[in-house]
Length: 319
Length: 257
Image 1 (cartoon, rainbow over the protein chains, first blue to last red):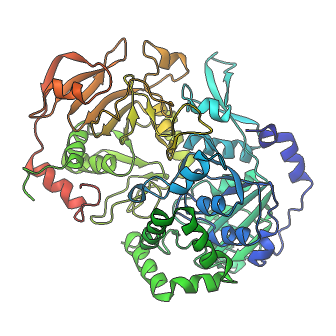
Image 2 (image 1 turned 180 degrees about the vertical axis):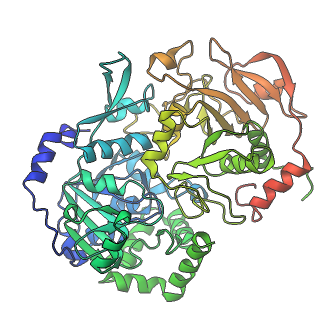
Image 3 (image 1 turned 180 degrees about the horizontal axis):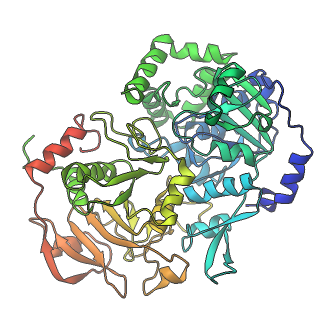
């Protein structure tokens, strides 16, 4: 943890100095990704293999960003890509791997045990509160979690005495990232965003960051947003760049639209089991660096596979 | 499959399920804890509410589509509310969660859990493990926590290398002194028996053995000395009924082995 992460005064000044247009936000994915700079703290929306902003992750890798700090509550394959590509020097997370059937991430082990990437672990709620404190514009939030554990020493969480009861509480510091990258279900072209299903931490992350980049499955007319304004979770003036990206999380999932492609994870992990991080380098060449556009990337999976994953999502959310 | 061949995961799920009372709430991890909670709900605790850390309240299990992660459509199947991750944990901080239900790990004599690093230096670990996920929050914030784990000597160590999730810390009130005002680990349900903690010293002790298991066997498979409760009971073996309900959730035997 460094002091700039929770400097709420500087973070507020950055927002005060920034344009907050209600106007057009639509742009290309490469234009959006150019707003990420070497050395930035980048907060990644979604959670594990759910609503990962994969189109933006892919483009950040293509633009060869370096020395990033990636922050995500549960980190998945996108974290492995960033490590192997040399884009991330530090990750802040509560957990990293794909999931129980795929075992402990061998990539995480190689890079963290080898000292190439620093892994700063916070509890899941503590990370959520770091984003929430920032979203609220305050330097910390009091909490009852994470006390007494060795995680306190890792992130450097301090304690605070409650001025009313005298009780000692954890003081989770705010986290103001330079950039947030998010994937949502729908937005109008002004960046008013709606999310279906579990909201994860995206709304807090959007308010915490200085620059907010969003991909959306669907760009809808303004009237759709205005008719269902109760569903809007990120207001347009928070968003800096918006990109239309159908299947923008794939092979991760998007609630109600497509299930995560577990077969793809099987193949990916089998290759890592055989060849270690070399397998991820080959994967990045095939899926990130070679296909020029996100549509070309999706073609590698093929329409049949995408349709299968859509059907699987419907079975789970329309029943 | 006849009930004579009960797998370790089935034994844990059945014994775990029996710990949960009706009209309560449980914060459950995926895998065996979730299956155990679902079994309890179906068998004896219909008014039990499951809460999952992905920000999911009141989900049902779709047979054959068991959740792999805490935040995916399988986990949210027919849920009653999707409040978001931070707010789900804050329900626990407020005191709405009776039980925390967690899976296996490296655990010590005071119920402290390590899922972070092996080795002396956190920043350059000998082995980097995935991390806490929500375990630290569940063990810090629920009214009581029950751990379900295979009973192996390598898992039951005298002192964990790193306290990811605080049990009773060093015992004797140290948990409360650290600011963890509520809760604590009440039981460790294993493949050999049920362990609890002494009310004062907070050291782990044997409370029950599973049928056909001796207290000596439990001691042999534990890396630290274990006391015994005043009366050590023997658990009832899983019934055909419990096994049939459990197996219906996982026809592909992804989690039941």
